[in-house]
Image 1 (tube, each protein chain N blue to C red):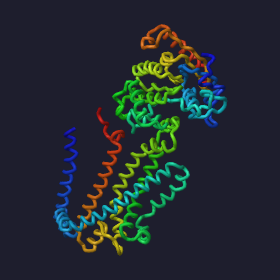
Image 2 (cartoon, rainbow over the protein chains, first blue to last red):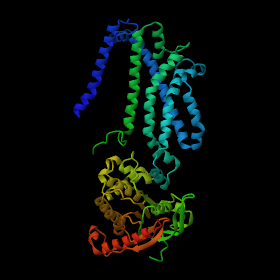
Image 3 (cartoon, each protein chain N blue to C red):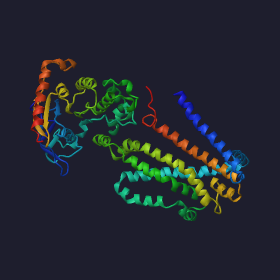
Length: 263
Length: 258
């Protein structure tokens, strides 16, 4: 057990070291300029030089991502409750949800700027559009997944519609909802950065990592661009870790995806 | 006993699902309060459907079925059902599962908690109250399931092969205990099983069904002197009764068109 634990840490570190080594080797062999392929050291140096800007931008992006994620969670759950509760809503609305999902956000961007404005509201809207679909699909599936036996048990014991939802269907749907949140958590920071890149640089935009991508690119500050990628990645990890924790807190006592507590 | 009106009465009850084959054909059966009636028969004879009709989970197609003299759905509050599987809600603790029927009925938390504790003590699972279903063995889960059914203080308990998935030792223990619990909280039982031995041990009467379509082939009254404890399984009159029911069951199977 202990040994396996060490290996799960050691192997990724080892492959990381090999990767960085290969990186330096490629740079040395090709003699590429720093503005085409910066070394990890140059990226870290750029991150340090730009750290105030990067931090401020990360804060703005986190705000947009969180806003969009929360809106997607609430709306996703609400829409799923409607879809899971009534077959006519399911057949009537599902195709249109697909249409919305299939339309690339990049096409919608000018319309979003027009309607929601170029700042935070627009970025939240883009994040929302990118991350709400997996929540709706998963949660709807979950609400429809109660075992027939359990549904009959509640029916026999005279459960009202509300009790059936509260005591059976919502708990059954919870692992599905959380799985949807997990996907949304990986999408939300990407959505916010993408949103900033699309609408954040319009007049009145508020910056953020997506806007920095635009700025560093036009200034050809390539090491700083890599550093922006690194910070975006960290932000994504924070989102995913937060949802993983929430999932653990809600499910670990009873769900089979978590180790059984001893007694 | 005979002047008492039946608590469950089937009068020429027929059941078919949609336009499919007839599942139960002209079933006439009266169960008197206090009886323990087992229903046994080959697979596909409609045993489980019989219970689903009584619990109003499924409507009768033709004939009349009365529970406590009323339509089955109106008698539901005096009824409890133990399914083939424990059917415990995995996100509730053992105690919360036992409380569930009372919770649905709006009983205050403290009162239903006290009742759940008492019932878990009855089924010898006092220490399991805070555990989740996945922490319990198959036998323990079934005890919780029965405790949950008893929480409603049912007049009629419907049991659909509740011990079918358990090993024989556990099944025997639970058979003995079921009779013990029934003495403390009396109920009329309608019990579906595949096991002749189990039916003879538990019942006051055994109804044998034939299949295709499901119909009553015959019935056997079961009475033993003295109380029914584990040693009953060693007595000659017990063996004789098992043999008698087995013969009837074989005849029911042979009579069914292939």
